[in-house]
Length: 64
Image (tube, rainbow, N blue to C red; front, side):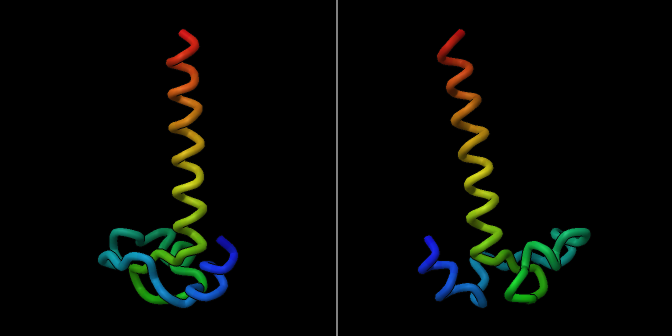
């Protein structure tokens, strides 16, 4: 994962219209600083968070 972040840190993973990310666009695009971009660093943070929340949700369903 560190290899990907280091080598692709200035390449956006996805670019959406800038107004979709209006309040937090500069944070999501760091370090690429492209308007409407989501960097690989932020992409890993978002997908990791979603995966942890989904795993916790499925785990709680299984225990019931």
